[in-house]
Image (cartoon, rainbow over the protein chains, first blue to last red):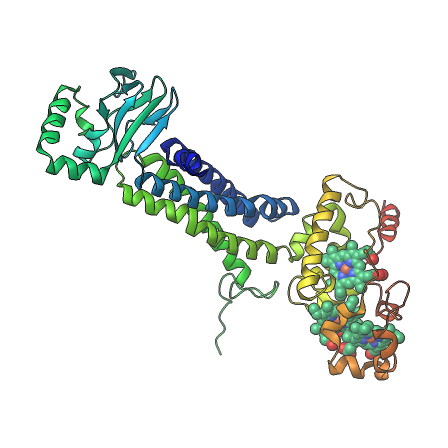
Length: 191
Length: 238
């Protein structure tokens, strides 16, 4: 274990990626607004705001964006084992599918929201069970949100690795088909 | 010969504005970029979870969070820093600058600033041309001072309110005039070569204060009216 591992593990989380991206967006929006203000009506105040707030925000925003790209790269490569805290959202309904998760220990709940109805818990999963395969096989967005109930250790497989195994290991193929049939059908619009 | 009227929008009353200057272009581009950035960021955030392919989302992000911001960084800095040399910008601190701008633009005034303005001897950025020291350091210096002025303005000091005579930080340097005038024949020959005669005094500085031994203003003043004179004029008029 190198000292970098905890940092890298943090960065690999979808939530971290989202937060960094959001921060970058906020900074750039702020800078763009201040730039508009300064060119439309140049006064000592708008000029100083542009120079002291907008310029640093742009630099920081672009840097954060680059960090976000780095994290998404890290997420796609070399991830095999992840840890989640209790109550952490692993992915959300509608997200792009990227990994399949197999639980080593811990519990998660699967939540689905449908238009005009409240989101409800449709399943609970524990050690030995896996989730996240649907979006990968169907090339569709996530059909449900998955959140941890306890601390969870899980093994993850990237989309590419998973599809290779799925295609070439008939046993795996069959068992996944079976599980997918047992799972509640997703809303038809989401495919 | 038949006469035709002037094309719409053209006038001899104001400085001729046929081509937009670089500052105007940079300003318009900055505006366009700013609006574009806002549109793309909002659009991506809104449609990311529907209808958009991941590859499109990534390229929109790359454009709105990296390429365009870097462009606006350069164009915006250029247009605002150049724009801050404008006389209108100086004039945005009305209370403090009215005295100088109004006088300079007054057709009847005979101050040095007004003489230059009347004949449009300085094409644009009149205040800046006479007041910022030239060269890189001069400009940076003027910007730094600008921030101090902002402080005075925000704290509403007596000079900012236009109630107290403004003083320059250090005595006005002849070099500021000479950037435009030295080398010109009219300057060298006029007044029976008076400037040549006094060259040493015009170029030399007093050891203790750094002020010119003989300021151009000694014979060519005043550059601006004094606040006290304007006040007494106003009270006479009432």
